[in-house]
Image 1: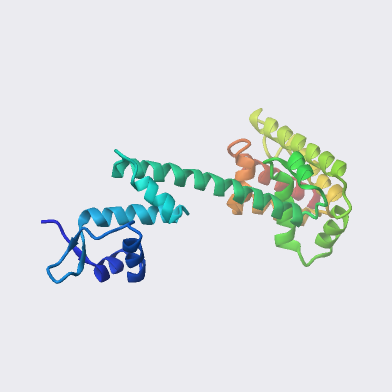
Image 2: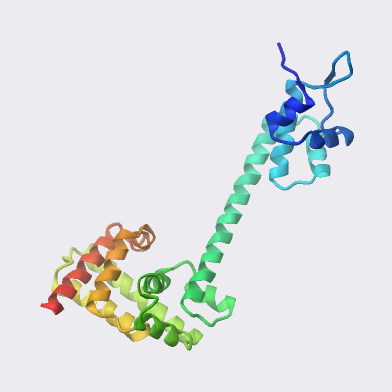
Amino acid sequence: MPESYRVGELAELAHVSVRTLHHYDAIGLLVPGERTSSGYRCYTDADVTRLQQILFYRELEFGLDAIAEMLAEPGTTVDDHLRRQHKLLREQIDHRRDLLAAIEKEMEARQMGISLSREEQFEIFGTDKVGGEWADEARDRWSDTDAYQESQRRTSGYTAEDWKRLKEESDAALVTVRDAMASGVPATSQEAMQLAESHRQFLTRWFYDCGYDMHRGLADMYLADDRFRQTYDQVAPGLAQYVHDAIHANADAHSG
């Protein structure tokens, strides 16, 4: 037998106020399908389903007038509304994801001390975060050190051309390391250690004096932090481990 709900019961079930249900009734958006012999409002199962649709659309930020028009469309079923809501929500999620990526890029640029226009930032960095990850790592581990302060001092004066050249160098180095791993060059070999040394010198040249112990710390973070690991492993599976091992081998060789 179909269930019916008084206004207070439906308000509690749907987590809305009684005042909201009275308003929906007053504007004709959700009129109780039944009334008791005493004149109390009673909502049917169909009314509950309609309320769900209203609340879904409200969450999608539609106004009440627009919702009323959509629910009044001839021949539109509950499944039709669910498909539409699903599509709209997916679009919102995609938009939010893009917005989140844009915000992260802006944060990354600010952390690196970039003094560029937005057009220059997107033109230079695109979706590649390698340079930014290195700078983030320096901030997280050594924000209270002379090395970090030196990085901030240097980068604050970089021009757009400086950042383009920096990124070109980092991209080329990443490709070289990837190719070495793909060719079967051992991470502990002289060739791989030289690539690790080039990476250390790159950091020293562009950001701060990166000693071997500090370089080891970076390598450890490339594995411990999923964000860093993915930066490398998206280029080639296992690349984060390879870079880590090459950096440690190079540091050990120079420490010895």
